[in-house]
Structure formats: structure tokens, C-alpha cells
Image (cartoon, rainbow, N blue to C red; front, side, top):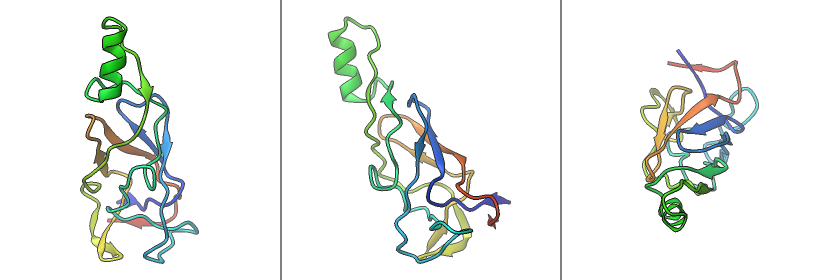
Length: 129
């Protein structure tokens, strides 16, 4: 069984240099041990998914331009998450706001090639299948 993810969860991108956090707007009015619980649609850049410090992905146009200007030496640039699809797979048997609940094994894809995972779910008492 996975753990329910909520506001304050610590996240990490494969191309980010620092951990980020997940912010959940309490639209579904469901709490998980205190903080608002997340569902798979809590994937909005800069509203739900916070930046990961600097981005090192060459698929990111800012990183590619800075690296080209530095004659091929990788130059990380500030992270701006580009997440368009929902978290996958979530917990399809538990619905929050008519969407599957977000558990700690779910992943989120960034358009710049990164895979965002959940390091700490934000709480440790509520489990979801």
C-alpha cells in the first residue's frame, strides 16, 4: 500500500539539482492527516509543482541556448517545470474530487525530459491502495 500525498510533499526531478515541494489547493476539501490531500490532477507548474532549483536537461531550450553560448559546456538554467499530463498511475480505487488519489509511487513527466517523483509524501498516517 502506498501513502497518500498531501501539501508539503517533497518531490525531485531527474534533471533538477534541488528538491521541490508539492502545493495542493484544497478544492476537493479532503484532508490527509491535517494537510490537503492531492489527486493526480495536482500537476500544474508553479501552482502545484514548484521548481527544482536549476535544470540540467538539454531538452530545455534555456539550457540548450546557454550551453551553446558556452561552446558546449553544460550550463544549468533556472528550473521552470513544464508538466502537462497528470501524475501516473495514482490510486484508481480512491477518488478525491472525482479523480484518483495521488500516492507516493506516482510519477509526473516534464516536457524537458525529466521524471518527477515523490520522495516524502507530506504525511505518514493515511494509506491508499
